[in-house]
Image 1 (spheres, rainbow, N blue to C red):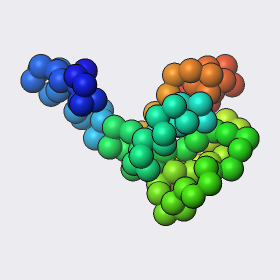
Image 2: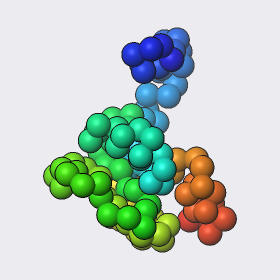
Image 3: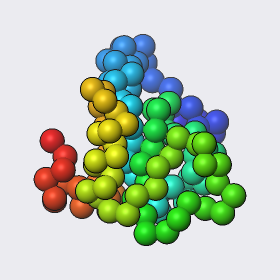
Length: 109
């Protein structure tokens, strides 16, 4: 990854991973990741359509309510909201505490 934040890969790697990224509709992440990325400047990461953020706090003050971010209280609510938003496309779960909780709860297949 260079200083611009753009990940550069070989054409073979791009050709292999691009179909996966095109399939992802929703990312589930925790509030800590959301905060340290400054909410990805209001655009979900990696070009996905929506981000579901697991948090016990409200959206940040001044947050654009039209931004495609959904703040939920708990992993079960996150899984349900993400499935609703994704339709028949893929939901990805970020690693870390939320990812571990979802894996332990059997919410990741």
